[in-house]
Image (cartoon, rainbow, N blue to C red; front, side):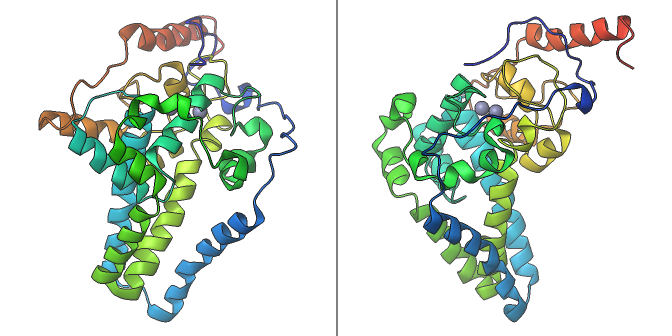
Length: 309
Ligand SMILES: [Zn+2]
Ligand SMILES: [Zn+2]
């Protein structure tokens, strides 16, 4: 993992302007967008506008809310905190359920997602980070996903979960999840249910998820002086169920919790805690007190030196 030593010089309340923007770097010559994938991706953004003809029903809006929030949890609590970082334990049925729910978000399979993400932590903002904002904000947000080169993930990064045949199956056939959800939305809410409950919700979910790679590496505050450009960003945290505390997360990615302090809202963690009370989630890994203390000590030092309000 690419992370800092415990020494800190930047305060949690440091103004954004004090943190230098990431220095630009040139993309590799073969980092080119696939034109067909890009056109398809943007065409999908237009589909919800067909609701001009169908109207937007109350059922469709409820569907959109439910499919957004539950799939967001499958990505943040599942793909990210479970498959990429193993911050808690599940039985095999719950593991598969979370993985299948994640495929419904149309962000490819759990093995692909988690393998790329593990590499992001290993090489964050170095030449080997595939979606560093140093390669451009747009590239870090979505460009890298539309590049053929990254259609395959480094499977050596995910050997632990790749040993499960059911996970390999849904990873290879990652279209099953979104198609299943699309049909369910249509059966429940008709055309409006499909256009708003599935397509609009999916497009919104994509971009909100992608802000963790783009916005949370460019805008926000740094409690920890990690080797990367990660930031803590309240708006991203609110929109993603806690993933916006990204500087915390880069400092200590092994914790199930990313909002390290009581006021750092982390709804993914609250759901995981609730699931642990009923025995579905086990062995949630905590944040060590020493890691929390690092940020507190740095803040106190800056206050004492008069460089922080
Ligand atoms: Zn990151
Ligand atoms: Zn992570």
